Amino acid sequence: MTNETIILILNFFTNFFLCFGPIFILVVNMLILESTIIFSVKRQNRYILYYGLLLLLGMAIFYIFKGVSVTSEFRPKFSPIFLIFILIITAALVVIPIISTSLKIFFSFEMKALKRKWIFYVIGFLGSISIAYLVFINNYLDNDGFRLLVAIYSISVILWGYLMYYGIGFKLKKQEANT
Image 1 (cartoon, one colour):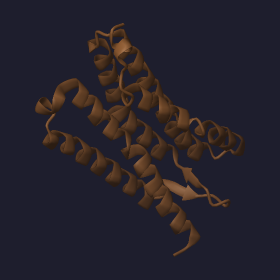
Image 2 (image 1 turned 90 degrees about the vertical axis):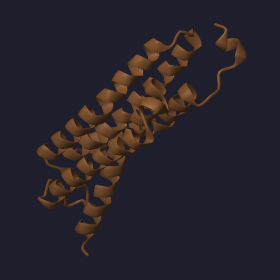
Image 3 (image 1 turned 180 degrees about the vertical axis):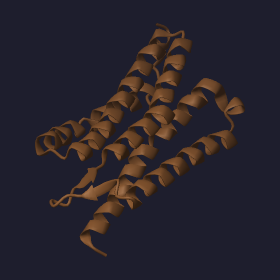
């Protein structure tokens, strides 16, 4: 197996899981919005499976037909059509539904403390998904300066993850619940 093949295989898995992960955030939002009675486990699994299969098959086709190549510096380089595919699939099937459900959840809250915490969660999600999009654009542009900026900005994933956790992971204190 050549270095190029190994790089493409590893890049495939990296991109797949980077795109696949946010579906679980959508499922959590749907559960908060609709409960497990309306949004059953079977329906959750169907969403996850269909999205995963579409992503897996679509990406595999692009990788097989050279939608992703390897540069002389052994870096992945996206073709324009592959970048568009990734951005459209993730935006249409995950990012836009997450934003939509997040807004519905936000406006369903009556307590200010819950609304404030939910805003942290949404900001954390938007920040983390921006890193993924920047990585994809970076793999298309293949520019060293932009690559450095994306690498530096990617350190903020710690902040975005913390904001998401703070938004729905921390329990509300009793005094916050009264506000």
